[in-house]
Image (cartoon, rainbow, N blue to C red; front, side, top):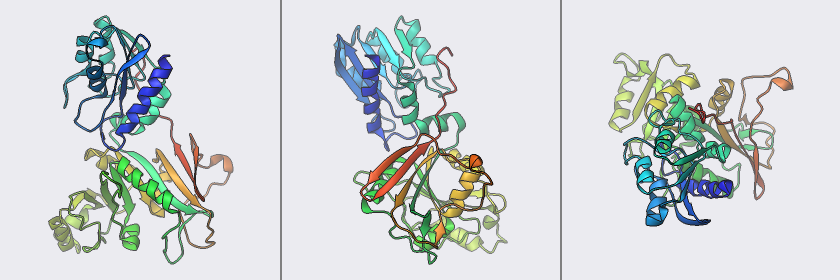
Length: 371
């Protein structure tokens, strides 16, 4: 029965996708005498936590009930009061938690406070799924690096464009609509300068009530056109990763840098011009961007694979063959099959005449039940 109710709480948690970052997705259910008397989920960043919605719905009937929650209840004052105090006040008898919270402000303290109050606490029910739905949160809170999610559309022979750089459209309309939901789900979206120059993309989430991600362009030589859509979105969410040399007064690009500043473009400056994915992610993480959707091009995707920095992704495959064209990945060559990159936790989706392959690395929680 614990697993049954926790599964329902996990389903509720997913309703917060794209709305709560950098907070985790959390669902909660209150059960008494075999009946659900309260349920809730974290609906938006800065809003009440899942436990609050569930306990408020249960009201006075919560006394003696069991609370199922997908993540350890918080024990600190943040944008909202600590949930453990409300759980104690409502006289919950038992609290079933899917997984502990690695946030240093919680990190087992919520569990301990509840136990000291005489509440029975069970940890680890449906933990694998709870970790999976919060892949982004666990990666960012434990490393301060954003979760890097690959999205690419390729032909059956692995190309992202023709040799003349035409890429519209490889995949079908349904696949492209799903991409808009991915853009809404992740906090940032990243492309290389060649993709910007070739496609002039807006990099927005074109869905109802969606949120546009931070747009990040890797541009070591500051080639970004002043008249590009990226520059002229006017929402202060466009970021250029470039060489710090471009910000110096004796640089050939100094005037362009000033013009871009006037258009409210944010900058991340790095040394040299050959940036590693790791240092890029470090700097993006400092901006409190917890997740990045990597959309290309080939150089960035290949580099991210070579550095083993891709945490998960979805590759959309269309039944088209180009023969020539631009490969979605290049720049390395394994001698033996056993040494190649092997994607983990695979899921296959059929989208009309397209197929997508989802994958992600196993999620780890550095906290143990006894901590």
